[in-house]
Image (cartoon, rainbow over all chains, first blue to last red; front, side, top):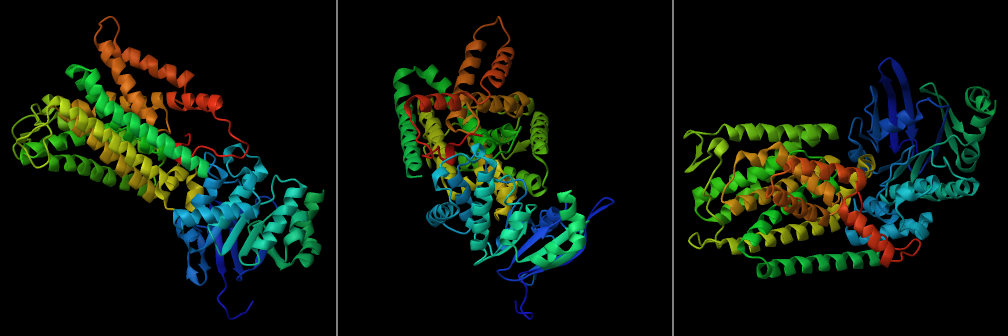
Amino acid sequence: MNADAVPLLEARGMTMRFGGVTAVNNVDFVLGEVELRCLIGPNGAGKSTFFKMLTGQLTPTAGTVRFRGEDITGAYPHQVARRGVGIKTQVPNVFDGLTVRENVFVAAARLHQARTARRIADETIEHVGLTRIAGRMVGQLAHGQRQWVEIAAVLAQEPDLLLLDEPAAGMNKEEVARTSELIREINKTKALIVVEHDMQFIRMIAKTVTVFNQGSILIEDDVHTVLSNQSVRDVYLGRQAA
Amino acid sequence: MAGAIASGWASFAAMLLAGLVLMFGLPHVFDLFGLLQMTVFVAMAVLALSQGFIWGYGGIMSFGQSAFFGLGGYTYAVAVMNLGDSTGAVALAIALPAAFAALLGYFMFYGRISDAYVGVVTLTVTVILFNVFNSTAGDWYTIGNAPLGGFNGMPSVPPLNIPGHPDEPLDPGQLWYAAMGSLILVYVLLRGVLASRFGRVVVAIRENETRAMLLGYDPRLYKLLTFTLGGGIAGLAGCLFTNWGSFISPTAFSLAQSAQIIIFVLVGGLGTLLGPILGAVAIQYMVTLIGAQQKVDGNLIVGVVLIGFVLLVPQGVVPVVRNVLQRLFVRTPRGGTAPVASEARP
């Protein structure tokens, strides 16, 4: 990344307090164009809260978020989405009463006329591998499939930055492999931030990893450095292995 | 999707044909009294469509659709008494309730109050309007040359006339065509809205507001437009109702009226357009029948019917019948076509 260039996403001094609890404390976070970043950390480390501040679902107590240099702190979620940020939430947010195809169509229809949106929806469904179940109601699908429907919808929205909160949760080994492949492919043209607990999965996709602990960034480095770091093992991996 | 679109067109064509057959056929079946009864049923069906649209598709729970119904009725009465010609009066009877819905909706949706409070606010507004119009007795409450008449309401409201010809009023037989024509037009309009990109987004917001927002849609705007359209349609229903009896009174705003609209939709089927129409006609017909006897209180029976439906057929008649028909006659291939969003279940 060119150091002089304006970063895709730049968060400074991000703090979120809920009453007396500080969920995220003074976090600085910079992401370049077409970068892939993994966020890891134990439960309650503040990862999802951080995501929600980036997308406008929560207004930070302090700090600023800039997207391509423009201040988007405190903007409504739909305004953030329109700048080109797509988010797959931890618990899938999908349209249960609509079919897979309709879910993806609605996502594509924000920017396009119905005819074009239908084409984009079909292409995205094909791309993510959901063609066989495109006519099914999303509410009837298994958890892993619902995750993919949500990813397909986020893709059809044509964002420049995707935030994926636990995209591999509830998936079997094959599905996890397929998802990691998909993420690498998306990363050819788009930037991603991925929150994940599954270390296998992190090893499959990660280049740079940011570790959250107790609302702050513990370490941010190359995946191998991070995973062999002793303090990371202590707060997270060690505890998980125990 | 091609199959779904084709079946969408087929059902639309069938509905349109059925509507036209009824419109031109019923005058040959019923005497004038029967036709007049059907006319008021149809006015109620238009009202039920407004509730069915904003609730079943927009997910907006309004307890006060009768507010726009009553406003439409009063607006028509006041306007036609002042203007002489009914054409502008009808336009006002749609525009004014729609504008009022837009104003009310702006504060509700842009104020980001929760769904339950939308119910409370709409209910309260209806009660306020009921009391306001109830206390408009006396000469002071006269708009132009139209006295509002307090709890007695406004009698002798001039009927619709041929557009531009105030001296050629419609007779009760002709009013039937105007009412049924309006119902068909509203149905066609709503089918069109639901099939459009706008309609898809409205249904999507009902399904998951957070997801719609994260995709870049502003739910407040979509809900406001849905609510406004519903207000205009309810106003049209009020206008038809006033024409039917040449009369409008504050009971149009009553809580019983508001409750009845919700019952129409629940019985017929939430999340359909046909359901509210059938629900309105069936319940109105039943109420009329009950009114002819004196052994049992009418409201009691309507209440029992509602409870029976909520417990036994919570989806309403139309979705249940459709599911049975689909199981019997349509073999859906795995991963094949599913019903389109415009007729999706709640």
